[in-house]
Length: 288
Image (cartoon, rainbow, N blue to C red):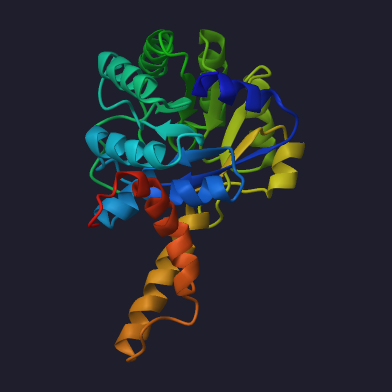
């Protein structure tokens, strides 16, 4: 089975799918080792790791694809949803982006309806007119046919255009053939239910990390509301940053490592030193 076929089968299984948000090879490797079947290559996490900054549409397509290839190279069995933001341009750019991720082995791809280039402010997410957004999603669906990659259609228009417009977009995208639907920034459970209903039985996706101006039910409640997939962009990133802070503080304080550091053997095992030696053994020369 191809990655998209495996993703479709996973989404057909009963139960809520927790999709950790990753950004590189190590996070992909550890996510797979923890027992997860799928992960979200998150634009916000890639922006944090590569740029050391916020997710404000500054990360480029080559940078995202490079991060995707790192993750897939290390964990080829992990089904990856690729965050393609607005597709990096118009409908034709969207098609090129979707086709590239399909060839690279992504299971699914996210395309949103934000305006690009983004306004020079961190507040709000102005969105395209509905019909223009619709054509970009239709272009993505057409480009997905060769590889079978699943298309997730996201609308960010709730804060700027209201829930009625957002729900209308979900209905339109679902009717046009999007495989997964995503309403960003729902304000309460009633809005989540409306979006799930508008998806017409197709899987609904949600960001469930706390701390932002959106409704963030826990996984149990999310499933009760009809959501199928939940991602948590800060669940790995925040502890990762906290670990770096602890390590740096330990060095400043004259210590060799933080109290929370992994034991040396555990770190070596995680990174695969013994596995490397085993794989390399057949190719050593007599004097090596």
